[in-house]
Amino acid sequence: DIVMTQSPLSLPVTPGEPASVSCRSSQTLLHSDGYNYLDWYLQKPGQSPQLLIYLGSNRASGVPDRFSGSGSGTDFTLKISRVEVEDVGVYYCMQALQMPLSFGGGTKVEI
Amino acid sequence: EVQLVETGGVLIQPGASLRLSCAASGFSVTNNYMSWVRQAPGEGLQWLSTIYSDRSTYYADSVKGRFTISRDNSKNTLFLQMKSLRAEDTAIYYCARGCADKKCYIEYWGQGTLVTVSS
Image (cartoon, rainbow over all chains, first blue to last red; front, side):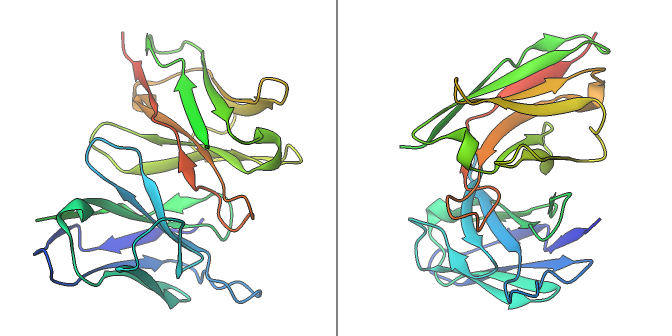
């Protein structure tokens, strides 16, 4: 099974400043089709999670362009170019390469 | 508009069985990846199970043999049958739908239903 590890556990941020979250997988998530099967989710306080990024770097519908995903193989990064107050919450990465699907432990982003 | 509404969460005793339902609207459960994900109090997300269009099913080791995912196409509803419930199964259970183009397993989430296993 693939183990996902996120860092940091907690990330204090300042509105208007950039921020980034890291995610590492125990096996490569790069498929022979060229895609990295890594997704990012944000769970805002009191809400259900929402998809931000799929296949490593593709923004989901309606996601602001200040969010970007990068990386390949086993190391991935979610970047927020300029943090807004509404971006607080817990960010999770999830590998979608193989079953069982697995989430990282989460990174709590707070102002 | 895609909507997922979970029901069935309750306070239940250890060892008992429970079935969760997820009523879908705005799309067909038949044509999409459908999954269950749970979140224990104060904890992170845990994937539990996914069912494919062809009815292939996949499970986390922690629930394999105890939980069963299924769907009723006529009712456009997803189910999670849970048996031999344990205290560690206490969590919010989310129903989720994958991307329409099959490029992701989980795009849309329901609001969740709380299952509490306690005597």
